[in-house]
Every structure is written in structure tokens, then in C-alpha cells.
Length: 323
Ligand SMILES: Nc1ncnc2c1ncn2[C@@H]1O[C@H](COP(=O)(O)OP(=O)(O)O)[C@@H](O)[C@H]1O
Ligand SMILES: [Mg+2]
Image 1 (cartoon, rainbow, N blue to C red):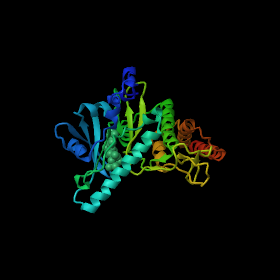
Image 2 (cartoon, rainbow, N blue to C red):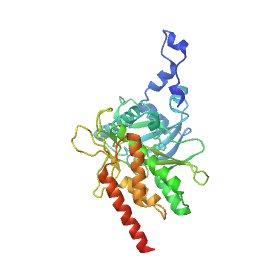
Image 3 (cartoon, protein in one colour):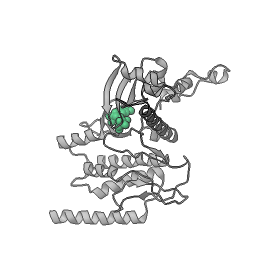
Image 4 (cartoon, rainbow, N blue to C red):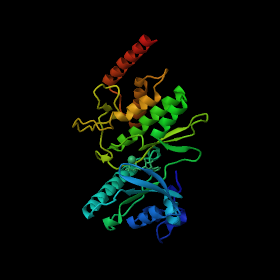
């Protein structure tokens, strides 16, 4: 996938010298002080975004070792700390550490077909004085030839241009969304902060054929819900009242009954984006479930399939009445 995964040469394996340099590179921690320097570097950093917790800037990595490990441009996130006292600074440091650990857990637990959805987290050290401020570093999401934008921005673009997506593209968009949710389930985690700013879209929108890929950032409140290999109930679950419309989730076979998954609102945004004369909300829900089921190997329970059919019938009837 990346240079850092390349197998070290045989000569290196044979030598009794230091381990391959590439391995050292990925292990080198970034101190809070260093991240702060990067964030404040007026020549090499640039404003990127802002969210509920912090402000992000891109930074052109000058150090060759960090560049080899993380790529030429990284994202530095600074947690808001304007006017906070010492105790609060300590609390903010804890928030940063929690995000760091959850992001690393996701990265560690995911195989490469799932890591494609993530930015790679750098390994930070948290020993510096909390009053230095709290920072996280990760790779910049993006791909050559594709524009990166927030899901919200893409949505807005669709609305303002009035452009129609092909049905086949809609199927892909929904199924790959389900695939991404399946990756989180396979990691036995929940992200909990899916929103139109934490989900990013890479696309060549405007060209044909359409390329469209999802990315997921901001593991600030994500949680590990079990051992990485803990056995799951063979059926996927859904937490919402009406069955057909919730985001697909998972239960553990140990049977405490909780359905671990994202909030229903997550998928509703996608219904709004993809619904159209040829696509019902229930179709989108179904495609998401299909992507999720294919990735996790979990079955779609008959009750959900029934709820889906009922919903389809109702939507079809409503449309026929309006026609
Ligand atoms: N790895 C990344 N690649 C590209 N953009 C990013 C990345 N990380 C963050 N951003 C941008 O910065 C914004 C804020 O980052 P985020 O981690 O969501 O902070 P917050 O916790 O404050 O919401 C995001 O909404 C996004 O626009
Ligand atoms: Mg965010």
C-alpha cells in the first residue's frame, strides 16, 4: 500500500545492526512541543478546518524521516484552549489522548481494505506540560486526481448544481457507506460522531465515470466495545424504532443484547442525498445494509427484510397516489 509496508531487504534481515530505518521512522513519536511548532509554522502550515473541539492546519513536513512515515503533508489538530486554567488544560490533554488512543485502536484493528477509509494517526507523546497545549497529527486525507471535501459540501454541491447521480452510482455510494460501517463493526468499535463534517468525500464529480470514495475522520468520542476478535451474533441489528431505517450495527455473541452502532441520523442524511424518482429511502437503507453485511459476514435478520418490504410498499403506494 505505502512505502512503509515494504519488506525490508534480505541484507537488512541478515545483519545484526539496527532495525530497518523505515521501521524506526513510523515508531518515532511526535511530542506536543513539536506538533505545536508545526501548527505555528507560518511558512509551512495553512488553515484547513475547524470543528467542535479544535482547529486544524495542514503542515508541509520538512523532516525527512517524518515525511517518509507520514507523507509530504500532514494535518495538525490543536484542541481549543483559549483562556483555560491549568486544570482545564489537563482535561483537554486527556481528550486529546482519548482521541489518539481510539484512532490508533481503529487503525490497528483494521486491515488495509478498511484503513483506506481513515487518515493514519501519528504516534504522539503526551509527557509534555499540558500548558503547552494539546495537539494531534495525522495524514492528510486525499487522493491524486480527486477533490477532497466534507460530506456536507458535497451535498450542497449536488443541491446547488441540481446534478443527478446515476442509479448505479447511488448503489455504489450507499453500499460503500455500508462497507465503511462494516469496517467499524469488524473493529468492534463505534465512532459515535458521524456527521457531515467528519465524513469526507473524495470525488471527480463532474467527470464521467464518477469516482466517489468515503473517508472518516475525528475519532474524538469513538469507543472500543470489545476484544478485537470477539465473536459476534451472526445477525446484524438496528437500534431504531421503525426497523427499516436505522444504521446497521452488531451484537456480541455473549448476548448482553446491546446493539452497537451509529445513530439513525447518520443514514438519514444519505437517504436525503440519494432519494429520487428512481430511488426510495428504503432502497438506500437496503444498499447500506448489503454493504455492511458483505463486509461483516453478518446476516440481515428476516424482521428487517420484512420491515424493508413493508416500507417499499408504503413508499410505492404514496408515489402512485401522488402521480
Ligand atoms: N486527516 C484529515 N484530512 C483532511 N481534513 C481533515 C483531516 N482531519 C481534519 N480535517 C478537517 O478539519 C476539520 C476539523 O477536524 P476534526 O478532527 O473533525 O476536529 P473537531 O474534533 O474539532 O471536530 C474537519 O471537519 C475537516 O474539515
Ligand atoms: Mg469534527
